[in-house]
Image (cartoon, rainbow, N blue to C red; front, side, top):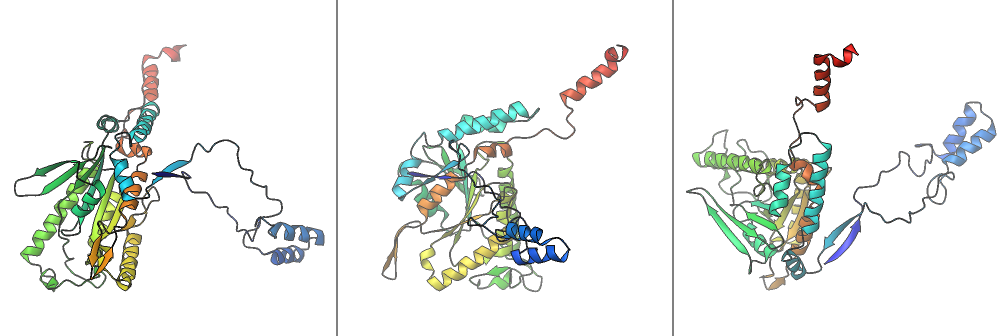
Length: 388
């Protein structure tokens, strides 16, 4: 397992372009001509032209040279990478893997309690006590969710717990020694929009789709799909706002089989819910080996446009797109190797941020009186300071 160092935040670019120096948008010739036209002397025009002319570093000659600090970069962050899938599996079996994360999570929680009066950090402390990280896996039926979970967890030596509701759904929970809890949710059917449009469904056409929405009419089967879809979205929202540490997710994986239909409107609706709640979201295209190169280019373009429509959240983050072949397979006499699994492992671990404790804490309401205001009111009521 290797670590690569990265900055905690992006650099801030300057207001002016390199070719404009201290006068953004003006070339050296135009800057000199403008000064002369305004009646200033020729020497002043030459000075302005020199200031606008870039130096060897691409900035103005008067720009200060950046000197690197001799102190260690304590604001940098280490990111994990795995050279093989086996290396990733070995790391996930390490009980101490997430120890530093929980320590920093505790530091953030203590800082919240000290600096924010009345903040509720019960859920943050529950996470520390449980030392578990929940990752939800969503996707349509047949999208390869269970196969992906098996590839990620290497489930030969894990504890699997199934929870079954009467006549409802079945969930499989995989708990790894490192503290990662992967929840494989039941597959669902994505209902077609009531009034379908060319942009609503893209990729592979669905035979018999007219039963869902033709001329504004809908069938009972389509209505059941819509009701199940809405119930699934409500359940997801409940998890994202839950005050139970076992239910509250730190990340969400959405699986979609490469080449399958993409109901753009529905998928955007689903992905936006966790994304706008600042939960890292990973869209995983499974079975990418089933698509040829031409189809793969088209599929990538479709998903790029869809994720652009989902947009960025308040942290400036976007939904990740990962192409995965969960296990090696032979297709038409050609063996395709396992791909994308070790990258997804690393991305999941790197997405864990101790500052996300801020989203787990509940802040006091705007009508909560502060202690300072209460003491002031007491002084006025007693009149002790007024008489003095």
